[in-house]
Image (tube, rainbow, N blue to C red):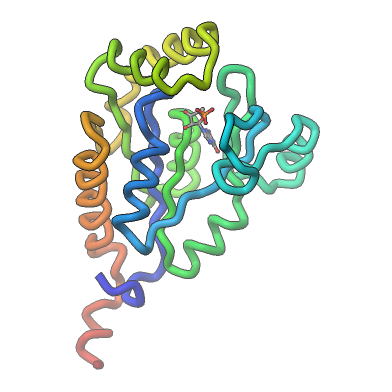
Length: 206
Ligand code: 5GP
């Protein structure tokens, strides 16, 4: 679909348990899709080796995060395993106004708050093939301690039960296939007539 025919970009909320592969799938999607941007969140979690400020996250102190919250600069936020995570509002508004689509890597409550604020957003839940595979992926990442992995698996059990609240459920067996499946969802959402108001007149007057 030509970008100019859509009034504004779409928000895609991607949730799913830690270790399911949301970050990897988002990177694959962005390679497949030139109109998709990733919303860079603000977090108080310390960076993992190789993570850069302003790329994977904006890494901020708790005090700075709370100041951003008070200033109304955060669309939604959540506390996950002892750290704050939040979506900066400004870049999201600017990019969608330019017709860019944005994908948010976000907790389940974060997706639900975003959908309340923007009911036209699209919710996608990414599932692991099994809990044992999820544990294997979290351990394989090698970036978290055993205690942190256990805490994330405990949260995962609760999160997976929330999958039916999302419009789309996708199982991440393999990153390439999973990204193709989400890209198909994105293309279908871009073609919904309610996102293309005025298209008939526009085409008639060309
Ligand atoms: P991680 O520490 O593994 O990067 O992220 C932990 C969790 O925080 C993941 O479930 C991720 O989706 C979520 N998350 C990342 N950024 C945001 C955000 O801006 N808002 C919310 N609500 N959750 C986020």
